[in-house]
Image (cartoon, rainbow over all chains, first blue to last red; front, side, top):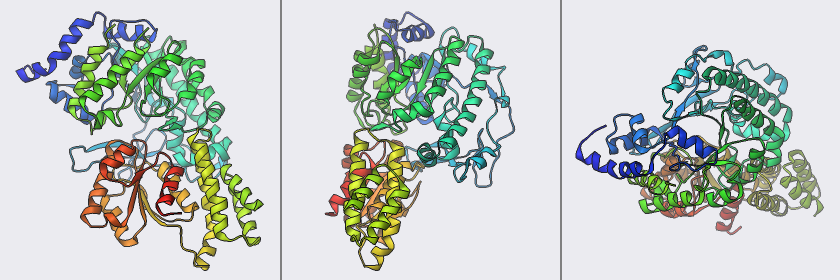
Length: 386
Length: 211
């Protein structure tokens, strides 16, 4: 941590508020909230693209990302799971690299040559997209295997953060426990949506291969860590900006059982489950609760029907919410006052009785001004106390 | 008129084979192409738009409806060309630079085609230069830009700037769409409009062209 006066001044407000508010460890605070009890302040989670991590570290004079998380009062630390020890991923001359499922990925750069330059790993080609029949799909020989991982180090990785922090087993963005997402990567988004209407057997076959993999994989992760994971996170985007991507009936038909199975496995090991989806999923929430979901991440306030006040009133006693900070308009385009108003509104609406983890609805994106990031965290501490 | 009603219903249900069959039947019954387009396909699209907006149908059904419309148009198109019926309008469409997401853009593109537009789909990760070069070459009525991420929407602004620099901004209407887009953003970058979903985007463009 840099101790120059300018950095000390920039850190002063958050330091002062934290000293006033905090009495518990991060882990105690987070787990109390998930159990719908009021801790000392609302737990804070953080998602930032690497470019914003760097900018924020520079602003506050932090020498590492962990130092930044520590200073900001972020209560969660991510565990990315076991180490990959399978065959090396095949590299192609066009620069694409195959992933676990044989899906070609590439790095896509946006904002080339501007202050907003960044990159994402994206699907370059879906191997099952052009295949016409189920019989041919059955011949595909690149399904991921739980044998490709070394599970022996996960426990020690999680222990590094204990007992102070709350450890979330998040997995990698493109390999996270899911059903629809790997199907989209394997079959192509458009084709899998067509299959849902026209070829149910194809959907079910691909889905079952994916579930088989994650069931065994997660059993092995959870038993290897021996209680050192505090929260298990899975993710599968089923919401769009103005409504769910698919109907509730279709979700029940294809995905509800797998969703429930994933949750039940974690619960067998006593681990609460966090599920990430973007978008408007309001009408799915009763089914999520019925399946035993503990935490819904990450409320996207700009999507229709996802106002935190209403959701808390309707479902707050049965499920914990994470998110509600808008990265689409308020953070990149608003003023610090707008950011403060947004964070205060969410805290005022959702903190009562616990069951709320404040966070952005997705990574804070590269187009967000630093003063808005500062306003966000200051407001978390200013209005998050109980 | 029953076959037109049938086309409308089959579009709403996304039944591709039925739409094609009914379109052929309508032609055999000597129903004018413009009536098939406007009373069958476009009416179908309007209903689909309402159902999508009110969360009664979702992306898979919207996709099927778009594909059904596109199929019907493939039957009508040779006849339109033979009878010198001009396309409803010309559209250049693509996902902006740095963004490779195309499900929304593809559905919009299909519905434009299915509504009788001539569509040049430039695909994904399209540079501002390529968009503007194509506008200069093809002189479309409308340029449609799509994105998913908030940082990639900045690339829409690059397209707007280049259109002005090359003095073609006033020759083309610009519509933008995608998850992080709203009317405020359209105003900020000086686009002519925004649409929250594919059917309403196509409807807005038809309004611009007086159709």
